[in-house]
Image (cartoon, rainbow, N blue to C red):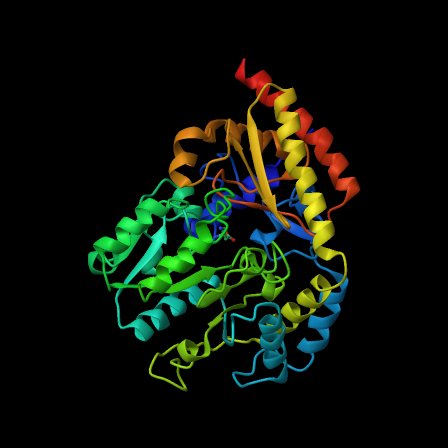
Length: 434
Ligand code: HOZ
């Protein structure tokens, strides 16, 4: 009989000292309800909670675990590197090698700076964009999440959307008023916003495929339009590929869609499960950063040797023949299973995927932006289905507004578990709905 008493006990204890019992809001299961699972170990495609329940994991630490949890080669590498020390606060050979590997896959990142989190990468990218253009405003899209920097907490996705907060308290009006927001996949509104803010927009920052409002791809022509309108208006184009980088392809959406952004931010996969992120782009922009230029940005743990080693090994494994074919095939199969099994139980479910990333909505058609997600997708059905899937040993992202992730360790056996598990979970949902 499925039970999570130990997680419940641990959550109760955690709330006494940790804010909300967690260290990042979506982990609290607040929108899906119930108690978050406390995880005790992982391996390959699986995670185990403190009650010893085993789950096929589609969260993958929110993206980093792309080669499978606790991959033996990554483990061996970090143990080897750790023998020489944990953190030096001085340059190492490996940082250059990782930057070279990133630049080979993403040539638009001519110059790179390693940092410790996606938030830091995005905050730093807009700082240098503002300095380079001499402009203050940035433009983002509703439901896109670029970390918790003040400028981004305006109509943001991820935990902000999950908790139903339109914006965050504590962000001064003077900062928020410099963030313009328009719906994703809507060229008309974008054009109008540019017309109303002539010569004031430093940069457009975008998740080229959104992973923080559920999973939503750019419609054909939208990214080329973004590239064109930013260029014509002297604004920089920043691709936030923290989620999509090395996830949808070796490189990112910019490789799939053949777009060259001015700046790119990366995180998650490139740290192989350790705190590491990066921003980079055109040389003349990046060379404005200290020590070469007047834009300041620094970090004690930037380029941490263990994180860099994990990232290098992860990228090496991903570069092997067949990696992305496997990821795409398994992910497409999971995506189709959700639609099929949903339909068999009488639900309208839509799903989309790219590489090792997918999302699904209880909706008759795929939403093209967060505005549509809010009006046409049932969060209530998602929440009940989420818990039914857990009982079948399947761990999906605990929010209707997050993408799910597949790893190289997911294969035919996990597909079979999902086929049976999704069927039973949809049946339970149908029974619950009667
Ligand atoms: N911001 C992450 C998902 N979009 C969640 C991070 C976490 O809770 O670990």
